[in-house]
Image 1 (spheres, rainbow, N blue to C red):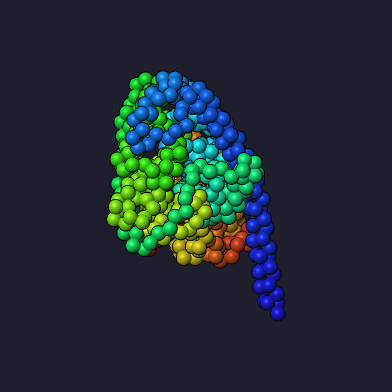
Image 2 (cartoon, one colour):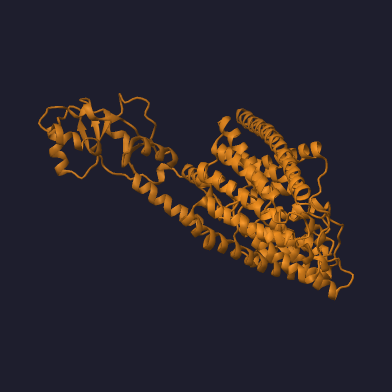
Length: 604
């Protein structure tokens, strides 16, 4: 009866703990989602206003979307065309100045804001208020000036940074802080793209190349859903691009697999182009002329390209809409892909602020459009726009190594799961072929490679290993607490021991003497008649039922090379004698056995 009551009590308290934990993350998720949703509303509203002010009111860009025979007529077809390179260069110089003066370390924070968020998750990059303010504000200016980038990267960085500061203020643990940081990232992405579930899954996938952060799933879903609700409530439904309703026939699966092949090649080409321009052009240039002028040169290159081909400027969502409608001619799809590659490389590769998500969707949609046109030749009743939709998802999945989240994002945007099967087939093909393609520099392979996760795993492993299996049964060396230093010097010359157990006159154990603590003292005070009692440390021992985590903590506190082991814990030293010591646990053995165990886990 007593045993049953204990089990019931334990189960009741465990259930209560889980409920409290769920309530805690519900509150934190709602808080981060609310803040991120409001930030997304402000950032999105400012961006739309500035784009309208500059691109339509000042540049007088025609509202017509240039396609088919009118593509090249877009050149110089609007007044003040010279203002595009002027605007992009000015924003680039401002960005370079602010980065060089206030946050020079941000140059090495990764590809974009999303990559910086990944770096902060892995404790590689530092989160500062200056970085968040500069990167978010200059990103809005970058996009509105006509440079090729998206808002999602900076907003992800901003939202995750706010979540980091909230976690720090609440004094959350490292594990909780990381979960809240991902919640911020998910809420920023979910608000802008109106896809909360896909954003939540993407956030926990994107921090690793071959793993995902499952512990943060609850916080990411709650925060993303909250941010989406706030954004929708204040601004109403925002449609980034118009998506028709698509369906597919099983016979088309072969063409979707072909799309996976082509997307992997396009992704490879994009990464190669981006990294070449970033590391072979702008990095050496930055070292020669400084951050300011190198970034300014990137803005100038982007502006000249956009002056001739405005289709490659900003996010390009309107042209994604055309691709989804199947209205972009076959040859132009190739031109759109390569043009956007160069535009994005000039913008982000030079150090200007902005996200890579929107350009990736652009290139993916154009790649899908190519396969859609080919499929249409063989299957006349096919809608080529469906391939553009699938291409958007799998292109980003490939370069970000996020196999599930982007698929759900696209399904949420289209408000349909009709293309889920082709999405799965095409994504699996693309990711398999592109397993060595990486856009984000701060991604880790798995949790084994993450500092925080590795420490947590190591701690759990130490807790499973007991002292009884690792201590050595050996004789110990005993000395009297009244032994003078002069005799200790002689003893050290004839003994190889590094740790002595100190006894009183009744042969009871009083303390420990570590040779490392007394060597310098002996050299200085060899002629004095001090006894060793003055230089001993409190007695610390382990029991055979202690785990190696406890042992490791004691090793770090005492700096001993070995620690005595007894059957039972010592509560008082009055009657504790030499017979109670059954052996020693050596620091060297602990790490040796631990390394073997860790190696065996990696081989499983």
